[in-house]
Length: 57
Image (tube, rainbow, N blue to C red; front, top):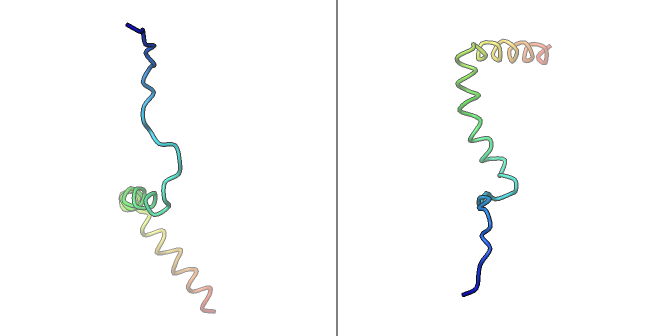
């Protein structure tokens, strides 16, 4: 009988990059939730209206 050398299992994770749309789909719900919780929506609306007013001049 031949002896075999056992190798430790290092996992099967793929090394590479994920598609930008997949990354966006993963991050967007958390970003929206944080904006709603911390009142970031009002800040974005205020900034957008300020920029729109500046561009309209």
